[in-house]
Length: 292
Image 1 (cartoon, one colour):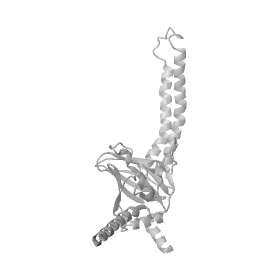
Image 2 (image 1 turned 45 degrees about the horizontal axis):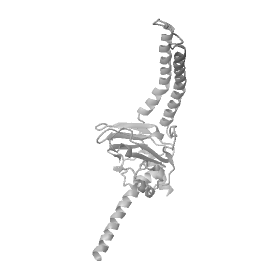
Image 3 (image 1 turned 180 degrees about the vertical axis):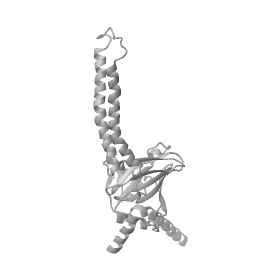
């Protein structure tokens, strides 16, 4: 009886430790709305919550307005040729080989269109590729088939795995978020520049959050960077976007954007180091201490 009781107590203690490790990352965060997620039968891009994403949406709409009349024009030309230049309607085809005005037009007009597109595209690309001064720096590593996150300024790291359907409720997610939700989340503060250092441990992976307008391949042996500044608190989902093996479809990404105060409290719960705080975090900790 004593052995049975001791065994049960040990099992309960182990379960408590496992449960505590699961909830440490997320459960003490406030309830957040799900903002960055796909919708059933959706055909539009996700609502942008960063300046980078707004530029991507603008370019997508711009190209749609350009390509639509081009497609209609080319389709009309094809129909005109089919109707008026088939063998029955035009049994004796013309034998000329050149038409200088048309050749000039089909060279100059596309060049002008491409130049117009470039005027808007190059600044957007530059905005993405020039890294700002980081308020938060996180190293992201892709594995087969999960993600690892290292908060390099605070000395702690964790892994992120997809939740099975029967685990969703335990983590506060609804069933429709199956294949999107993960057991831990990358937590970042709202309205702060977050720089990610992206790499991979085995094969090429790709880290992306559509609502942020960012995507970066993680390549073994290389360290690439991306940045974003999320403007709304909430939960955002992404997926590995580079075919990486049999379970490629099962390595989603979860990011939780929280207030500065909640972010600092979350860091403290992770046992983060605060040796060299950035100015914004030092100021926020002073404000929090004064308010308490």
